[in-house]
Image (cartoon, rainbow, N blue to C red):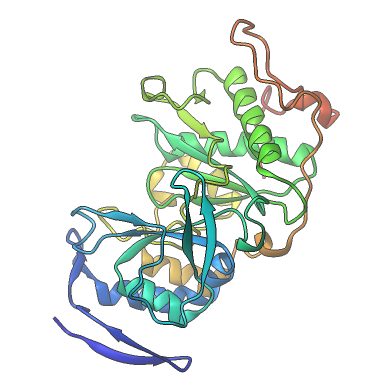
Length: 337
């Protein structure tokens, strides 16, 4: 297997096993993973910089055993930045990698860290998320087409509150909706808000939406995973490769593309591989750029902290539609653009 020593921004890196196939289904090699990482870096790095990073490593390929790595390996260059964060679960300090620059990204790719999972917080204040995320996970036979419908319902709710939201594919089966905040908040607020919206969608569309993560409830439905809004959890990062049969990527998309996928009922319209993503970036730029600076505040919803009573079928928790000052868009005709 070929090795190579390269200099990147003044940093020297030894790249190993470049011809090793990491995606057996397509023959996509470690060298190609590194090449994709280098080419997508200008749009990827800004979304990861300053965020504690968890790696999902596949040293022998995506069809072989993997492992998560939170604590930065001791065998790392001294220029790789880390941040110490206390772990209550492990009762110790974990030194998370900070993916702040191109040499660090290439070093990570050389570790066969195919999936990159950043925190929703910056390391400087791990208790304050910079965004809210809704992970829409389809239970077979449902797929990303049904996720598009749920995503559009979510978009309509956000619009009632004057909030902008941004979709991306998970790169796997589902769709993810992000609401940038970049304002003072905490996970109690964002998680409660996400949970309230998930329950509202479930109560309005029980035939399609579920807010409970029990697997037996999710067949043919879309699980709105609100629980990702947690200091101790991470979500696949934008522009990250996924460990699937093919080298698919978690890709930002336009709402018009989400509408088109739903209209044509064609899940393939929202599947993008590494080479396609690079072409999209060249053509469209970074569709997720607003997440870096757009400042928004979540609405204050009375009773947001209260859990929905399981014994009351019609209870929806906080009256989100009423707070928006108009009828919920979940009833009636779907908005089109």
